[in-house]
Image 1 (cartoon, rainbow, N blue to C red):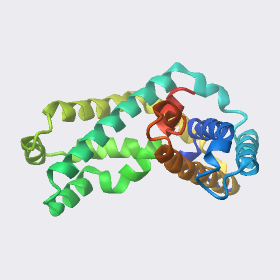
Image 2 (cartoon, one colour):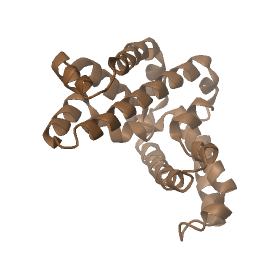
Image 3 (tube, rainbow, N blue to C red):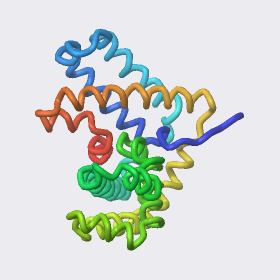
Length: 226
């Protein structure tokens, strides 16, 4: 039987999809006003689709998500993502008139390859971003960025997180084992992941001024609180 692996098929991520879909279903009467296709039937079918997929492909793996080590790991990943986001935003302000430097630096530090997926909940992309950042940051690049006003402590936080995630190597190994799905299963979960991510993007904008509700559609915050 053909198998494949991919980070978005991890137990943590599919359970986050399930929880987000539940919040979507509970708020559908309000959210139906912002998308034509969003109605109670759509929300219910999405929730049932995710539940059926979990039952079919993940029934043997669900207990592991309760392990405290998973929770600690997700907290480390959230902290790393926050620091990377702050640095990226600062650089885009500080070097807005030097697009070449931004493009070159974002490529070198891993932002170009991994940031988009990392900020949308992909564990492996965030891991790769942190390790690429740690490996490729040179003193001259750091000096130029710090001269614009970014504190060196922010770089220290990112470096500390990049080192810390190595302590959770076992979590990635466990998730890799969990990710062994048939080609059909992999495609099914990837479709769910894409649909839920699109919902998160729109609802996050809609709930911009309602932080509590917005957090219900934030992948990392949902996963930390599984």
